Amino acid sequence: MASIVLENITKKFGKVTALDGVNLQIDDGEFIVLLGPSGSGKTTLMYLIAGIYRPTSGRILFDRRDVTNLPPKERNVGLVFQNWALYPHMKVFDNIAFPLTLKKTDRNTIQQRVHEVTSMLKIEALLERYPWQLSGGQQQRVAIARALVKQPQILLFDEPLSNLDALLRIGVRTELKRLQKDLKITSVYVTHDQAEALAIADRIAVINNGKLIQVGTPEEIYYKPRHTFVAGFVGNPPANLLNVEFDGTKLTIQTKTFQAPVELLQKISGRRRIVLGFRPEKGILLDRITENAVGIEVQIYEVESMGREQIVTVSIEQTMVKVLRPSEEKFQVGQRLFLCVDIKDLMLFDFETNEALDVQ
Ligand code: ATP
Image 1 (cartoon, rainbow, N blue to C red):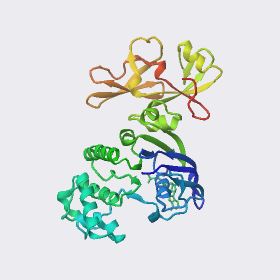
Image 2 (cartoon, helix red, strand yellow; image 1 turned 90 degrees about the vertical axis):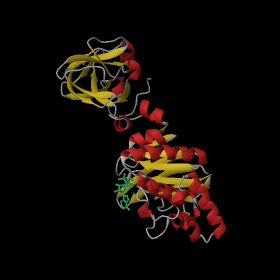
Image 3 (cartoon, rainbow, N blue to C red; image 1 turned 30 degrees about the vertical axis):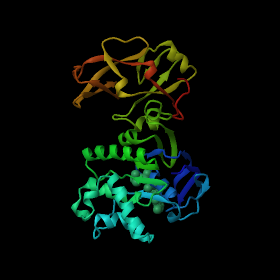
Image 4 (cartoon, helix red, strand yellow; image 1 turned 90 degrees about the horizontal axis):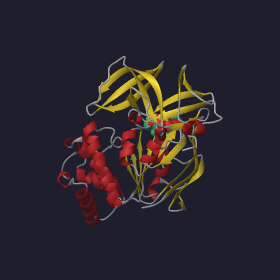
């Protein structure tokens, strides 16, 4: 186990700035997920922690020790990649033992360590098989075993589940979370899948364009996004974000004007424009406006069943908004209703900077 500190990390590849002044502290035994869209810099950050890349500027500390210039093999880091790259000509035992064989570890220790990790991951019965005789989920566990056998102080996962089908992903993800909790090895996990990040992380670090946008628990990231990017990236469907104009008394979306409780008007006083956000499950569709809520007349545009719930897309003139409602509620395309959101469920962002207003 080890804590990790990334201090003002910048990484450039020629003219491309892959990471720009990243500061991040990861606690001992913590499971942190790096979440961001393709090209945001997640893998680059992971490679910097592993020692595969050196930063252009900034420092990396493990347990307060500066490792910025240490090569990968001196960092005691285990890696699990998207392509698990098991050696096809080696049986599972030899695949797992390989990092120890490289280090010329004695035969008895190898036997013992392989036994420990394979019993933990419940793959002891597979030791005599070749990788092509394994399912995707089993191969993935072998790859994790190979990373664990070195007894690393830090584990790095780069989209480790992306080659598995949807159902298997959910199963393996649960196991991985349990395993990490049991072993308490500081882990950094890269994904672009926000649902996976919310499910598995102690804390999520959201990255966009090489910049760290927000670091927080899944609850903080989901309910208290500090930036419209986080609100619009996390959640399925993600938060609705509406550009709203304000004249001091009433609010307007495009040309549609609506009233809001005084409490909200006070929070945004002095502003001409804001971005108003809310989670789809926080929207209510009624034939009247409820108390303590903002309410605006909308028209039902489309209804999609998801089984237990339904996604109801409503229009405010040209602006589409998605609301998640229980399947029992019935809606008809074309129907006019009021979309209401309790003011405690509203997210308010600055129109220019896209950052959350500190008024809640
Ligand atoms: P993905 O989810 O698609 O893997 P990512 O978030 O992991 O994306 P990175 O691979 O870290 O993103 O890339 C960040 C940026 O740096 C991208 O613009 C990418 O094109 C660039 N980049 C990464 N590696 C190199 C390299 N070796 N040479 C030049 N540019 C690079």
